[in-house]
Length: 148
Image (spheres, rainbow, N blue to C red):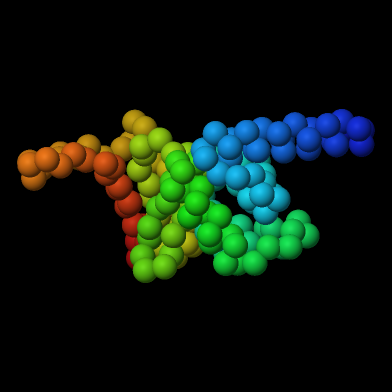
């Protein structure tokens, strides 16, 4: 769909204002780099992204940002509750814009993370917890490889 230049500029300003408000509401100062990275992260409704993927996307969009800044920003957005981190193994982590509780398939050969549909989720029985403790979150990651 074609939008005249004025409409694209107005849409961009609106997106910036929404992102700035989202960052402020989460307790973060809306710096230029945070705003730019958040625009990339939240432009789609729901996405999984690694720091390296987001950095490559930022570079492709001519944003001057280092990989270290991307890592730091993703961690800050996770700590303030705007993103959910999904640890795969070692230093391989995905950041997800869908922060509600849900489960994932991980396609190992493709390095792709996909949400399970709610009607397809695994039922988890929580064991008796140590006194004074409560469940913060249960992560279910089902790793898949092609059947041979």
